[in-house]
Image (cartoon, rainbow, N blue to C red; front, side):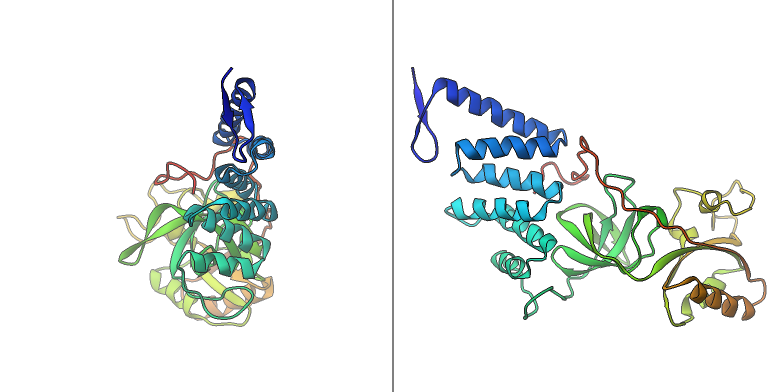
Length: 328
């Protein structure tokens, strides 16, 4: 009978070694199939048998990360860090993500510093300027993509008015993954796209779907230029949202044209707006000022619906993107 050693030098017989190899294969298969709770449990069994192998702690931490169990993921990654002889960037990033999700700002700052990232001085939440990027909201359910301004390496504030169905709001602070899953145009350059992991702080700006008619882009520009209290942002969803008919989803009466909005045939008078505001009264006042200030401006409806944030389901491998073969 041949033998092998585990990490602490204990002899393992052939039967035990085969069992551990089969258990590890099952753990990786569960992870690859999106069965994250099973994967975390299986990697946990491996850790009990061989507690000094860093990549097993890392993989359990990765399963806990995508389960969004931040304290458990942080503990796993810190143990992985302790067991390694050299700095491992993937472990540090996942520890930083987990610490941010758990609100452990001292540990988050330590991990980002280990990664060579310069941070604003101070304690507590990081309030820096890490540039503009895109974030895919609810990547396990639809994946609407909006722009965000990054406050730290994995935390950002939403800069668009998301569709109400997403459950997110303009100004929400979200935690996003550390690996880019694609790129989007931003002005004359491209910016990375990241998967949103969780909303950390909800904005006080509710989302209102507003249906109007107007004669030209100048009317929309004039509306966006108005500054009234309790109004966060006005977005012309007619231009930015093309994958569904908002008027149909809200029951607003209208007729479909064969042509797309703002195509080669000209301007579409019917506009679907997303307005972020602290209350309906502020939206009503904004629209009253706008319609009174120009000819041909018609307010058809103001609608507001709240939707819960959807959670991922077991069996979804939602974290991989077009540019990503393996998780980080």
